[in-house]
Image (cartoon, rainbow, N blue to C red; front, side, top):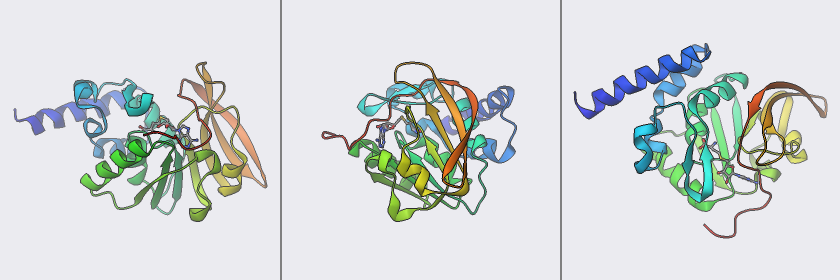
Length: 217
Ligand code: SAH
């Protein structure tokens, strides 16, 4: 088998394993199938790219296991007209998955190095509807607001007010809520008037949402 055939077989097995883990939305499964996770992980970890494990990325951060990426994507209930804001670009993997389901994806991270690498990956994959920015996600990105959907991929005690304000009425926001280094609750919020109505999805562990842009890197 050539490398690319081997990788295709690995990715097909990967999609089957996501189905077994309860991901049923075909559009979400297709989006995960279209994004080569191997491109988003450190070369030394590439052999684990299609396993259902979280992996370390640069700047001391972590990318989630694919079944969680799929579950969070499914919970966002995206359509092809939506503009999505992701807080916590990290490797860019989640944003790349979202880009196959939404009209526009805006993603931001407090580390310049992560944003730069993610931008290169989006270019290599020809993803033209993802824009990555360096910035403090607790402030959101008002210039591109309002958003139909917001996904926070770092743990926070509460949803930052700026993000509530930048979400459209009836919009959906997904976030891990709780203390850093503890188990958090993944919550799905729907904006009703100025407030959010919450429902719990599952227990998760995410790296913390840290206010401010990183001084180094
Ligand atoms: N979604 C990513 C993984 C995110 S890890 C992926 O698919 O790979 C969480 C990310 O949130 C880290 O990269 C971290 O730097 C970022 N982060 C933490 N606090 C932030 C803030 N205030 N603004 C923007 N990004 C932040």
